[in-house]
Amino acid sequence: MADYGLTDLTQDRVMLRTLYAPPEGAFGVVDVPALPFAVLDGAGAPEQASIGAAVRALYTAIYPIRREARERMGKAFVEAPVEILYQADDLDDVAAGRRDKWKWRVQITLPVWVDAGRLEDSVAEMRSELGDATAPRWEAVVEGACVQRLHLGQVDDLPDLLRDLYLDYLPREALEPAGAYHEIYLDDWSRVAPARRRIIVRQPVQRIA
Picture 1 (cartoon, rainbow, N blue to C red):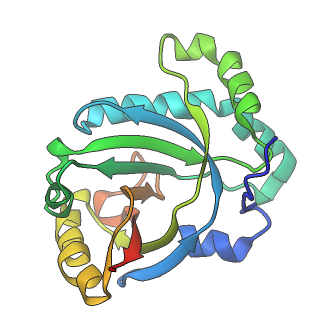
Picture 2 (cartoon, rainbow, N blue to C red; picture 1 turned 120 degrees about the vertical axis):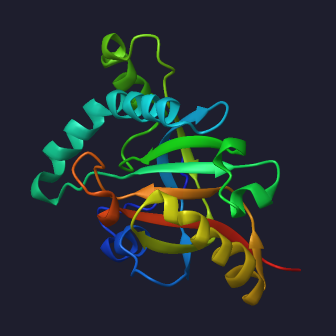
């Protein structure tokens, strides 16, 4: 396996909390290290049906890996959350929450001992369950400096938060977007009321030159 300098979140619990358990109610800057992901790209607007199908395919494809991680870690095993990255040709469409103009990617972080070959083996094991669904790919992702915030509540409330991010916080801090905006979903929405759903919004940034 190539040396990507990946961070093992099972060992770095401080980084795990920083990335996936931030405080609610304020934007903060974090440095996101290199992490391994299983990734599926989506075509077209991020509609619920297409994204839902991609999430189901992703979870199905990595089921053997999740099972192995649970066996290795026992009670310390924590289910990785789904992350959905959004991009648009016009950044204003992201800031305004016009999702019909967005492109998207679904991803889930993997244990550091999973490489591209192990993911391919997992997909092959689950191929009968996946049917003709596209297989996810393995990717080492380094986002670096990011602004993030924990949102508690409904997705419909996110446009207001995004306007605060892009039109107020980033300009005030002399920052600008430097990668795909994404949302990290910390709850199983089939079990959590809309008003109690926890979503991390994260935007890679760079200093304005």
